[in-house]
Amino acid sequence: MTAAVLTKVGVGSAGALPVEPTIDPARAPAATPVLAIEGLTVGTGAVDLVIDVSFEVAAGETLCLVGESGCGKSLTCLAAMGLLAEPVRRKSGSVRLGATELTSLDDRRLRDIRGRDMAMIFQDPVASLNPVQRVGRQVAEALVVHEGIAMRSAMRRAVELLGRVGIARPNERANAYPHQLSGGMCQRVMIAMALACRPKVIVADEATTALDVTTQAQILALMKTLQDETGTAMIFVTHDLSVVAEIADRVAVMYSGRIVETGPVDALFDHPAHPYTRGLMDCRLHALSAAGGRLAAIGGTVPRPSARPVGCAFRPRCPRAEERCEMVPELKPFAGSQSAACHFPGSAR
Amino acid sequence: MTVPLLVLADVSRHYRGKGGLFRTGEAVLAVDGVDLELHPGETLGIVGESGSGKSTLGRLASGIERPSTGKVAFQGEPYAPIGSPAWRRQRRSVQVVFQNPSQALDPRLSITAQVRGAMDAHGLTGGKASAGSPAAILARVGLEGLGRRYPHQLSGGQLQRAVIARALSLSPDLIVCDEAVSALDVSVQAQILNLLQDLQAELGVAYLFISHDLGVVRHVSHRIAVMQHGRIVETGAAGDVFASPRDAYTQALIAALPAASPAARRARDARRRLELAKV
Image (tube, rainbow over all chains, first blue to last red; front, side):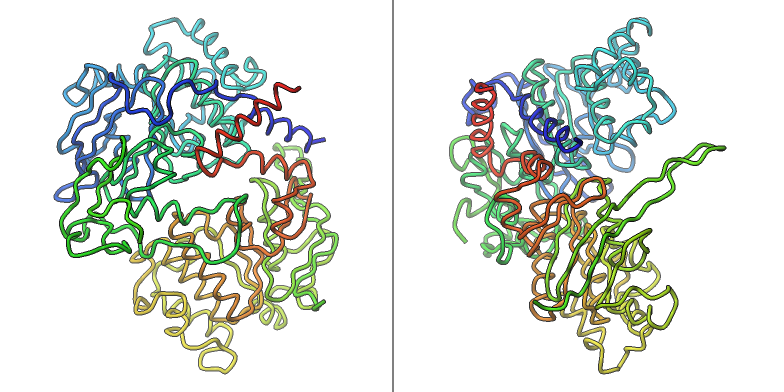
């Protein structure tokens, strides 16, 4: 019985398919980006944690930020949202939402924009929700604060939103406390909250990492469907390349604070240009591909930001490294709209 | 057929549920009538989602916890009462590696001291039964020259290597790995999986490998058992379970796996659209 229900859920997630792709998946970023980050450097004291990061996302587009832990993916997102906390601060660079430069806004103006035009979804939904407030009210709060509507009508909208993110019996569930819901349900509440004010950009930081595979499949399908409906731009942080294969239009690979490769998702999977991207691709494990044998591991670990090697930070782990790599490689066009920060992009090892 | 290293026969484990102040909750059946066999040198993978009972199964298999009903036999004998001399012997033969290595190590002791401590506790230091000196064991797991470091001075992957070294120092016959690589980055995960496979080839140790990650389980396991709601819904050779899953739940798990590439995703979505159109 339960197995039957679960099967239905599995197929149900497949049922929520995105509409037939009408756009060339290998397209370049659209002309008018919703969010543009340029030359962003974030750090503490003398140590830089994010170095000279630039990217853009267009309406309806999903950009995935990929890399191992400690590569600066989350800090990049927090900096974009204006949520960095001392001692970590933005040292230089610009963050533009449409025509508005966010880095020059004061806290009050920034608070107006956050939650209304930009929303963030975190990895741990249970920790991100207020444990002593009913979830419906938490979703409604965003509407009251940003759209100035009365709590009564905001609650009605909240119930609608909970229904839209696939929560059954939203009327009842709106009265639940977070601990009464499963992790997947709580993440749906977070998505409802993020969607409440129809933001232009959603930043999702490892939003499905803590979820089971079946729940992850449902949440990813849901986010895609909602994106198709609303045209929201999405920045999706993940370390999981199969999640990237599911949702990304474009990808930016980060290593030790820098973007080392960027391009359309198909190009990155078909011909990764940077040895780090290739390394990540090679050590993937997929249950449906042939098993056995030794895995291609990337030796060593990400260097601490305070102890980066001179030149290319990937050099000590790179099978291709040469003397030239003691110079930091620039992010240069490689093929089509793919770029890589490597002196020997795309070369076989 | 060899004599099984570990046998679970109709094993169940229930916990008293959460109740209110004046009422007892309903009993929760974490593991429900499980039958399993594990042979020397074999890797048995246990997959399931959170709450399926796979960690409880791991604790029952390692003797840390005892079944409510049913029998667990390790090398033909039930686990002895905790604290007895026979239990100490069994404890040495069965080791566990958990998800979070920083919680599994003592922050105040160097890595060498922790490995030596485990060996001392079982009277193995300098003895013939041991796998070698702490330094040799640390070198074997790729921590050469790092023995004087403390846990906070090592990365996540290095810490998990230290935990594996401590387990190996006792020359165990079985290592229960409960989400042992789940917290690690993919590149480091690959390093640890390679290490575990090398050690098995060299030492003939058996693994009960528990994970929610089907890709990882498929890669390391000879056989796989799929768990749902405390029961084993399907067992079989690793390749067979994924190539031709018989149980509906296993099929749902596999259908939910993310695609291996964008091209595979498009092919799958097109196939599903076609199936939906047929319905």
